[in-house]
Length: 395
Image (cartoon, one colour):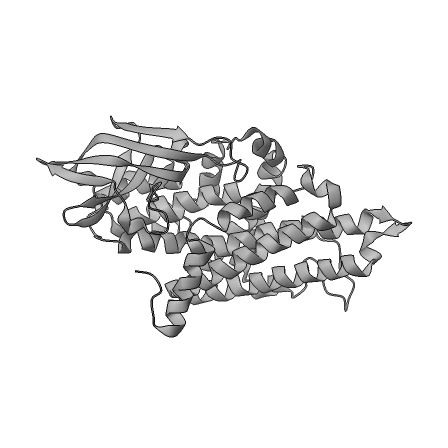
């Protein structure tokens, strides 16, 4: 994690384009604070957590104390940082593990954001301060077993009964579902798709954790089952109807991803660079071989290019000029770039690349999930196709 001193006139191999110079003092402080947290609290235990298939729930309170949860939201105990600062935090968290960044993304962008954007003042006061502190963990119930890339075809429905809503249905692949205290559940209603704040101790709500995963193992993934879950009217998000609600949340999460995956890419590149400098073959370090140097250079270029893209999109978001298609550009290209970097790093490490003694295979496996979730690579391709042609390839 720490950089060696760089001789005058020589670029830092771990920050070749001096991207650090693009940050202001506040952004650098946030970045360094999260980097230190990852070094102290994530990296020492992540291999064991990944192998055991466990997310340490106690990290939520620590992240809350650092102000990481809902950090880009204003008020209600949230830090109110810039979008770039939030992105940088995601980068450092995913340098640790995609599961760590996923937890923060789901808490802030998928669970807190809809309450912040579409909730009543009473809902905001009730939930957001405790969620920002990490005292209440949230999850986001949109995806269903038969409604992934087409969430509008969801079968979960909510019907009015007197002054209450009764929800029936199920959600699949829900991050943090098994440890959540509250779920933001999207359901079909007679008036369109609506969002509901569902405390997980409500009668009829069950979360079943998904096991035997080979990716995102240090993250809780669950199925949510809702059977006659009865909620008062006051638990419905009042200020949004239709797919605009959940899609706006997904855009927030995708923004964190396009930054975050470059942390995973950087971890893989740095591991390969350090390994190549110390691994001796034919009486010299493998970093001296042309083919290895080419792989290292390709990883370095890809990682710097992806980070520059993330920074540019972050500045656009802070300026209010970022569109959903811009986010698709970043999510599509940076995830596939990070996945290719991880695969190249795995090759450089040889047999050592498949062990949890090094971070590479863990990141590589995790990125296979990130490649699919929050909009598959194919869906983002079609979104961009529509953006440049004006012709939708899907309904």
